[in-house]
Length: 151
Image (cartoon, rainbow, N blue to C red; front, side, top):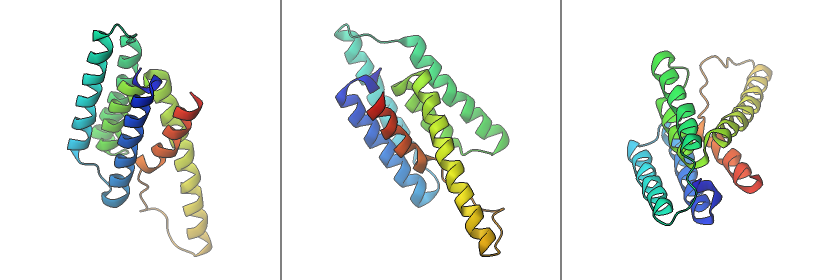
């Protein structure tokens, strides 16, 4: 997995930081960011294959599958942004299935905590929270850093 190597960790952190920043500023991420990282991952895996490094294809496909499921959910329900699904496709290729699932779960916990804080603040101020949107990719950065440091 790319996330097993120092250079891979640096590339993943840069990707997550750019996505978090874009999502925070624009509530969307430019498709070129995803395309560039996908190309970098492809080159990285080709390098690993050329030098007989271990590439766990099933784990990569499992990680990508989580992202595809999120992307399809976004397209069908609008409950998620399409960029969130694309992000998890790219991160799945870098982290693999189990770490990508952990990234999603940890990010979701962070989002839930932030959402509860927003609801509590708006309740105290007698405001409605129904139309509030929370950018998901902002919370993937601290979750990703945690995964890269621990795992």
